[in-house]
Length: 118
Image (tube, rainbow, N blue to C red; front, side, top):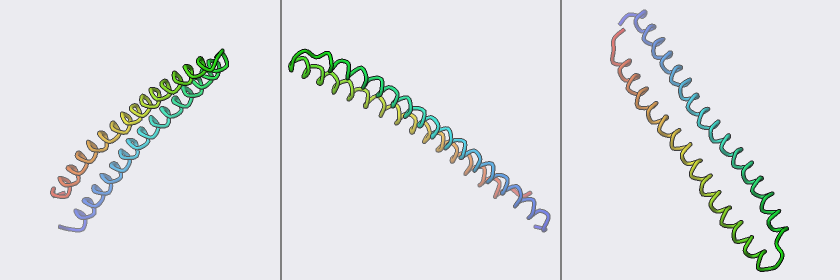
């Protein structure tokens, strides 16, 4: 293999690696962006829920009402936390699927590029 062919092969491999890094960064950015958006939405939801719960507690007329309200609040919070956790897991699972697909595709491209003669 002469030096021009070696240079071309190295250039092609470098370009492929840079393209791969760019694609990987896009996958990571999207996953982090979606997760951050979800977390901010969850915080807003918990704040709204917390204000509503304070109003319910203030409206309690007796210890029995207070206990019933606290039980309802605990149940709602557990449900909300489960829902938010499941959504976060969905986001992370989607990112994992994208990453797996990316790796499978790019590893194969790198292998093929390495095998091929310029």
